[in-house]
Image (cartoon, rainbow, N blue to C red; front, side, top):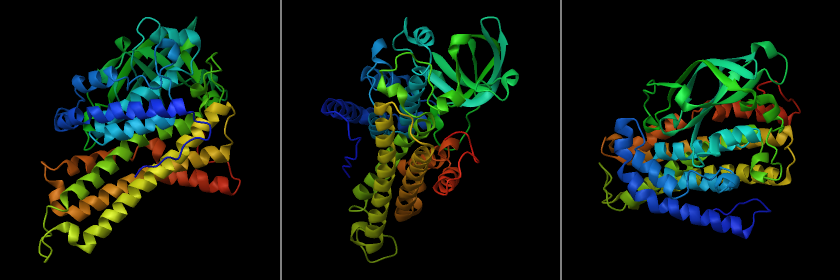
Length: 404
């Protein structure tokens, strides 16, 4: 379905660039799909995929234009992630996350951004914003130690955004933060042994007593409240609300996986029989027709929720005014619902296709494994999002999580 829901102030130039970037992603789909089994089997997105994405500009969507990036918007990231996800869930996940982590860097002070991109403009950034490390104040900065997982994209990254706690700052806005660390100072431990999204190689990062200059620390509570350290306040992209953005960026790959599953059903049903029935092809059977309708509707619903959140986020970024708590709660709810609808679309397709869906040669089994895993990321947790949103509808705020 062609869904055009967009921010009210999106320019024709932005839409034209988005269309071009999605077309570039579509051009790469045959390559990415051909490598999808290998990606899953080897537990790693091939360098060939990453190089092709970079060459097409699809890893520079969230990088500031000051460093040669495209500095697009979140609807564009969503659409590119969806298109890549139609070919390979793991590759789409890295496309979205490597871009999202570049956005995080764009919130830091200018000196930190220069550290990452001034000498290597195409430097890539992985990250884990969960505060799994500790930071202690020393002269000029912090000493940081920790173990961070899952670090999607770390195998292809030059830098990492890492969440930390500061025990000495308990009760202040600096008690929790994110820091920037070069990958050369971290160790990657091979811990990502999972059923789905295997190719993301979301392994563990380990660092011990690392020195992090003060300008490479950013308060998370400040970020949640829209107080970013970047001095480039005229750059709309880096004014987007922190938590809704962190949730939304995970949905694009799942929109693509749902679309891929529906495509497989529509392509296969006219050619396959329906076992133990009189129907010569599945497409003639009302049960399969209903399954196709329901799966397509869930895939569309996932898009509608994600696109509404993207429109709200992009509009908030354009205006430069932090969205109210209740609006941010709805954005997080939208991201969670998008994941649920996308997952349900894939489930319906698998049920309609029967046990053959899970044959190792059938791409449906990989799609199913990928979305069952990806849709359960903590920041997308639909039950938590629903509780936050439901409470907000009754004027109850801030009792579930500070991440709204």
